[in-house]
Image (cartoon, rainbow, N blue to C red):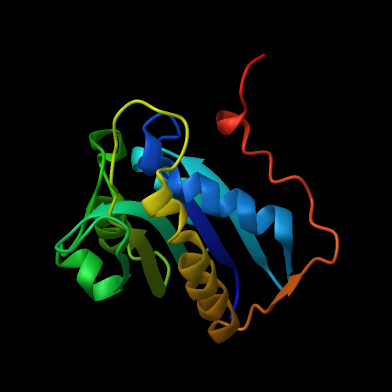
Length: 175
């Protein structure tokens, strides 16, 4: 597999919508990836997704999603489900979203061959800088899923004996 990107999508100022950046930074702080792989806290990129996906053969996204189920439920979508519109990002600042970016890349004759979206149904997307306990409890399952998909794509992850600071700055309390 050539270049693989893991993109954490979301607004860190809207509580559970910060799931993607939280997971991306947790991976950056706790694992080294073997091969041509990059993990990014992409924030709310809109159509900037096109540039973030440029040259990627595979992409794994993490985001809060609207779907059937209860807050904290973990969901995994493949490219076909995303393109069919089977999921929606939890917040409007994501628009235009992942589906539109993938369709635009297809129209231009490109884009990653493999796309996966790992999502969690949020409990709250109100103003706030921490994940709710419900969504925070889903983080280990998301990490396991993302790391398993990376392994499947030929990008094994090595857990660090001494983790780096994940720099989850938005959760720090100001003195």
